[in-house]
Length: 478
Image 1 (cartoon, rainbow, N blue to C red):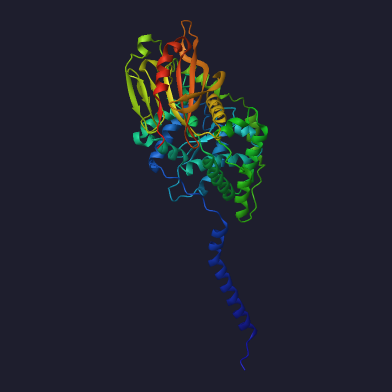
Image 2 (cartoon, helix red, strand yellow):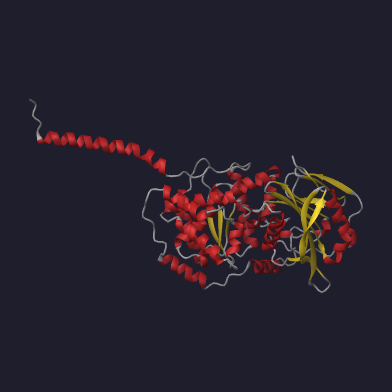
């Protein structure tokens, strides 16, 4: 009979324990992978990684020209950068290399934030004021980083056809600063005016990425849902701006909660930090300007560069000849002495006489764009479009009510609007501008709209040409 010594027994038990630990360690990665959701896969884009970085750098320069960006040494900027850099290490570096994220603060009172391709992230002072704790602000930053990581802007630009004409058109799009009432939605959209037109699916993906970045950095992702819920409850002057640019994908709070349930339990960082309280006090002491005020100041600083110089009727009136635009979504006739000054056969287009515009403004012409409303109802979609346009151009006013219009068998909606023209009168005061908005359904969930623009004093003279353009408009349904 073999007798085991106590030491031998202990060695045997120890060996078994080590074996069990090794087995557990080998199994652990598989177990974590099974319960930890992976980051969504970024969308494909016609733009390379380096091209998107270049676009972002161009955009940064334009944003500083067009928006009141705080200096890099401002305590608000330093704090936002500190939070952003806490999240950066957790952004996956595959399947695409990690972008060189940068973080900035814009001295605007609207509760909003946006990002550009290639890494730049911007947070308004109003957002810092609205946040209740550090975790909520980190969530907003992570959400915007999610848009960049998912390549939403680059994918949208690819879809709209801008990739076919290279980086130049995106550089032009990034250069906002439009003086005309509708110019900001046409020739020169501005960084946030273009890149914030995200779909609800985009928003859901950005929420997902932002929640995972928060979790990895030690913040409770629930704070992101809390911030959105707070804005929804506030409504009024604060909620709509952020939520109109970041549409609720539906059950946002529940979706984030579902992500949290799949994550291993952990101890979260206290969101009520002394650093946040100090910075929040600084932000509350600031007096940020509104977007409209910033635009007015910028126009004054431009020293007239945004103004369209006085023109004669011969410079802008149609000469009687017509050309045909064969677009991928429609065909259209336009005056032969006008030009396609923005866009191409697969993207949004602006058609105008050269004398009726500058780099930053449109005073005479037509804008044709695609719109994806949340509602399938024509009436609701039209009201949503009106609200969207007025959101970017608060000076615009609706004249009367929208009415039905039938164009080549397709029933749509039309309405007149009035705003401020980039042309001054003899006393140096801006002329009033008339805009005719026409919207037609195209494909499920997609509308195409046209806006015809001219100073009120000239609009009736141009209306026959505008009406001929509308009569010639034929949608492609294939």
